[in-house]
Length: 70
Image (cartoon, rainbow, N blue to C red; front, side, top):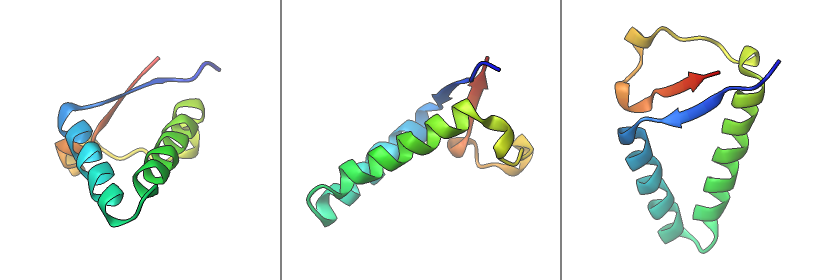
């Protein structure tokens, strides 16, 4: 089974960059660790979407949504 493409919505992208900046200020290298861990998790989700629980869109804050496409 082919993996999915993952696209962060614009608000989620902004929040990710804000978190990256925040962690970078806390400690040198922490922003990069956050980024690497996030991308590793997103790659795992992309390759194995069946491992994760499906949540109805209505229950999500729109800024936290990812779009999955085949």
